[in-house]
Length: 74
Image 1 (tube, rainbow, N blue to C red):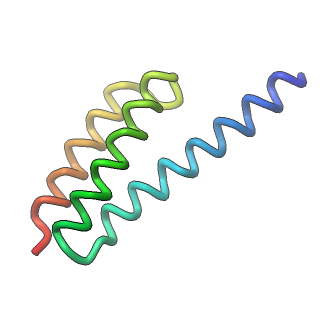
Image 2 (cartoon, rainbow, N blue to C red; image 1 turned 90 degrees about the vertical axis):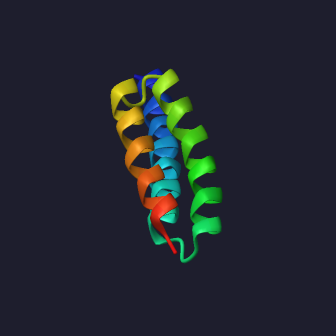
Image 3 (cartoon, rainbow, N blue to C red; image 1 turned 120 degrees about the vertical axis):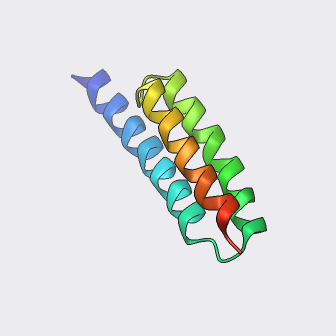
């Protein structure tokens, strides 16, 4: 039970950081800022997939969609 509490807290923190990073890519005003935010989000997505926080295909899908959003900003 103690392990579960620690792991749940850690997973919640990592998932929150991941969601924040994704939000920063979507809300970035310029292309340069969006691409910089994308690189940070990409690292978090890869780490989350490696640690089984999210499924690897889900991480790949997010990265693909976020890159498309980031590169299309003006």
